[in-house]
Amino acid sequence: MSKEYAIKLPYPKLTGTLYPQDIRCIVDDYSGRAGELTAITQYIYQQYISHSFDEELAKDILGIAIVEMHHHELLGEAIAQMGGDPIMGGSTCFWSGSNVNYTKNPIAFIRNNIQAEQQAIANYRRSIACVRNDSLKELLARIIMDEELHIRIFEDILAQLTEK
Image (cartoon, rainbow, N blue to C red; front, top):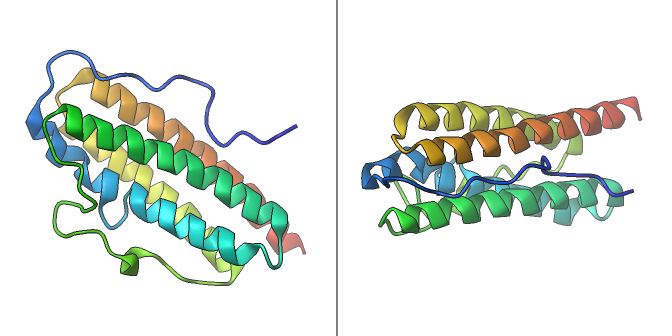
């Protein structure tokens, strides 16, 4: 049986009045320093280096990265639907590979991933408070559910790594 990396619920579609001002509320979630683009790149890096010592860890990280790619896609499409330009950058600068934490120690990077997922949830909650469109709020709340699952998965991985 394969592990699930996303909650089995649909992602809401954008409906109703779209407010271009809502773009500024989600642009950092999309590709800011601590946004989805950084999570994707961070996890892909970790997946590459994990292959040499733990195939199951590499598989789990890739599974989570794929879900983060979907979140990035959903946010990019929402930005475009609201009339914005989904460039790879947040509110203050273009995205950079320097946003990635290149720690090679698996215990350290899994702890970092847990903190990053917790920060993502806090950021999404701030975004929900900022946006006006209800369907966008629902989409962000749905993404939070996946991020909470990722924390649980990373906590399980951390427990396994620290038992070894």
